[in-house]
Amino acid sequence: MNRATAPLYRGDRVACPVCGGRFDRFRRYASEGSGRRYLMCPSCGSLGRHRLDWLFLCERTNLLHEPIRLLHVAPEPGLSRRFQALETVDYVSADYDSTLASERMDIRNIDYPNESFDAIVCNHVLEHVDDDRTALSELARVLKRGGWALLQVPIDPSSDETYDDPTLTSAKERERAFGQYDHVRVYAKDYPSRLSEAGFEVDVIGYAQEFTSEEISRMGLDRLEVIHLARKP
Ligand SMILES: [Zn+2]
Image 1 (tube, protein in one colour):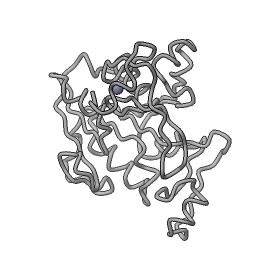
Image 2 (cartoon, rainbow, N blue to C red):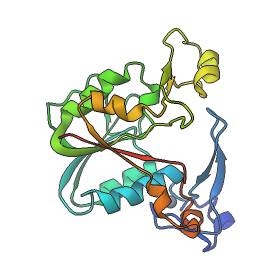
Image 3 (cartoon, helix red, strand yellow):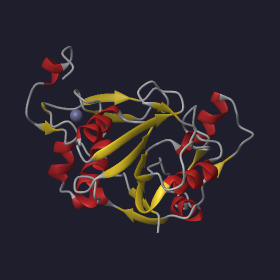
């Protein structure tokens, strides 16, 4: 646990499934980019959507049960530590420009042969990538047949069609149009069809709805997060 903040959160009312920590409460965190508010784990830094992802991956994929080679793009630190601790996971982390990852990668041009990975986790990345269709076809290319990819993006559930506009290039314009200075589009209800175009079969799962309100509060889960699990047939 982070020694500076640990005493402030000592307690047992909430529990983080990612790091296993128990606390009096989660840390309230407001994103500088979007102004959105999140419940952050005081120890591992996970947010509600990461805790939901972790529970989903453990329960509904082969993550814990079979040896897999996993590509983790733009690794979230809490999830990254858990993946690396699994003896059955051959772990590769990659990012465009972060030192948290073990290698540098432009997902529009991935320097790996076809069918290199059994699984991919690439969350909240595509909304930053100008040519997301190329990125998706690259991710599909390096995934093995029968493999899965967790490809979470922020989605506007009130909108039918994904909105982008490549003429908006300044941080201010992008913040106004897409809700965050470094986003290049707002995905909508048509997101699964973009995944299908890249060759994936997609399961859209309202996984948070399977938990009771007590569980959602105790683990600080993001109840609006809908899981998009893509599979390469
Ligand atoms: Zn945690």
